[in-house]
Length: 257
Image: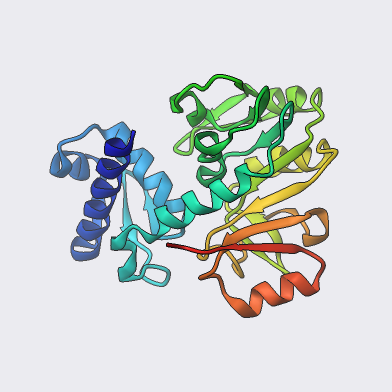
């Protein structure tokens, strides 16, 4: 597992370096350069799109130089995401049913949950690639598969979610701020996020690394008042963190080693 993660991070570093020096590249060009499949490249580009590090275009991508910083090459984002997921997993208790949305950070929780008899209900199609664990049961919502994020959306997913009450939800976002609330860049995911919030009877968490705190995107899934906790890292903008706390949100900042 560890070697696999290292290989993934090295490949992603190479992709970002290629985009930095060649501006625009197609999926086919990246796959050929890295000697891997186009499906793998699309997943990597999806990962970067969630971090607002790239701009997608038909058949390929270019670097979003407004958000890109050179310290991405040290894999800081991956370290932050794992630290946030590990902290979130500590809130999961024996017997919990929890919601997880299409967030790559929230999905990482599956590696760190130690509670027993936990049911994870998710519209994240990538959950099928996660390592299976005893006492952890993953239920997919079903629905229309939306690429490239491999999210499950639409009426079928919503109808199934309406039949579930979860003890807690752990939701990722494209941005969170006092002014903009809890936002996403993908319209089809709004309804799923709203149902997950509505059908959670206990604590509601948003997981967001430093690149998402203080940011706003096009589609609103909820307001800060709809949430209980934000779990982020110590690199997040302190002014925005203070404003979120003043708005009543409990903010946990995870130290990055």
